[in-house]
Length: 259
Ligand code: IP8
Image 1 (cartoon, rainbow, N blue to C red):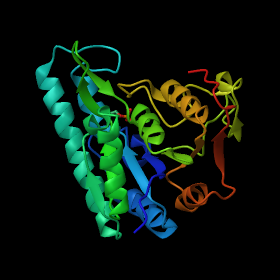
Image 2 (tube, rainbow, N blue to C red):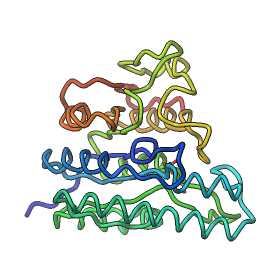
Image 3 (cartoon, helix red, strand yellow):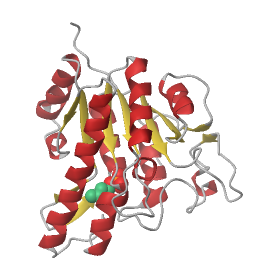
């Protein structure tokens, strides 16, 4: 079998795979539908999922965020437990539709020299789907939340990904009037309404602002970034397969990043 060195990165947004208004609510049907679309694409995929009503519920309860080091060790354990619980559900749903998820902590990616890359490449070459998630990490000073959006950038770079698809709970990035922004360019980031793009105030991470800046960062390194509703599997499938889709494409000239 040929060694897989380039793979598509997919983010299953927490706002799509859970109901953020209801703590610990999991959308099994949504994950299965997205899983079926990924299976039928036949693409090698590195998967990242967000925290949704699992990780963000605990993180907020215990005052953890992406910017602050937290003294709440209980909060660290509880948030991590919630993420592992969600990850087990996601992997079970993916297995149920014929995929072969291999869950791992994003820590593995921190060894970015050969270690991280060859680990992921070996999994992909063997026909497994590497699955990781937003997590609680120790950054040397204390614990903080590492968003799945940031992990997507790392993973796309590691895998020289041609494309990254973010599934969210809206039809793409929306402007102030609620209309879908079809193409988000380097100068149009301010068009995005902060409250209209798949993240909510329930986020312990950077919400939509972080998503936009990470998408820009990724696009500037040559990865095509597509944002699509995870609640519309047919559109998700089109976005994944490089077809015209209803959603947002982020286009930034190579080497330029507003993030
Ligand atoms: O939902 C956050 O990941 P995100 C993960 O991708 C935790 O920002 C632990 C809340």
